[in-house]
Image 1 (cartoon, rainbow over the protein chains, first blue to last red):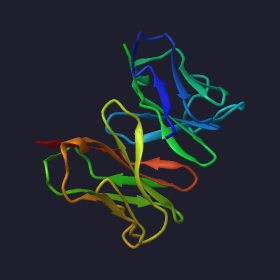
Image 2: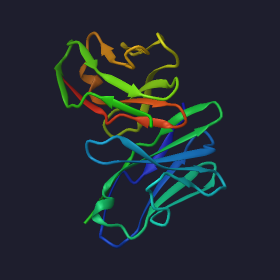
Image 3: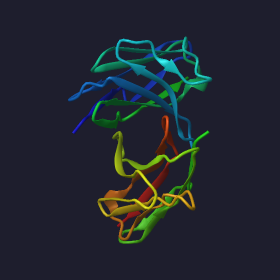
Length: 114
Length: 109
C-alpha cells in the first residue's frame, strides 16, 4: 500500500537554529501534503496544506514565516522550523494524499528545542 | 467548528479483555468518521471508517458504529491482544480531517 517516509523521527536542536523535516511518498505521488503538530495530551492540529508546485495554505494562527513548507515535487515535501524556540517543541506529522489514495501518514517527528 | 472528543487514556487491559474507547463528535453536516491507529514507531494507519449514519466499520476485530442520534463512534473489540497496544485516534472529515487527542492502549499478557 501507500507509504510516506518521514525523517528524522527525533531531533534535538538548540534554540535559534532551524530544523528541516522531510516526508517522501514512496510508492505514490502525493499531490497534496498535510502537516500536523501535536502537543502533549492534545489533538493533532492541522498546520498547513500544500499542493505540489503551489504555495502552502496555512491554518489560522500558524506563522508561515516560521514554518516553511516546500512541496516542489510529487514525492517530497519538507517542513522547516526556522529560528526554533522551546515552545516549538512538539510532535510533527505529515500526511500525503492523491486521487484514489486516502490519507497516508508519516511516522512523525519528535522535535525538542533546548 | 468541527471537533472530536475521545476518552482520555491511558487505558490498560489484560489480554482477552473487552475494549471500548468512547468517541463523540461535533459537526455542522454529515461527516465521515474514522478510527486511526498508531503503533509504536509507525505512522497513523486507518483502522476503520463509516461514511453515513448506522454504518458499522470493522477491521481486525475492531468495530465502530456511526450513531447520528448520539453523535458517537465508539470503538470496541471483544478480546484484545498484546499486539493491539497502540494509540488510537478518532477523527472526522467534513472540509478537513479533524482528530481527537488520542487514547493510548496497553494490553498486558
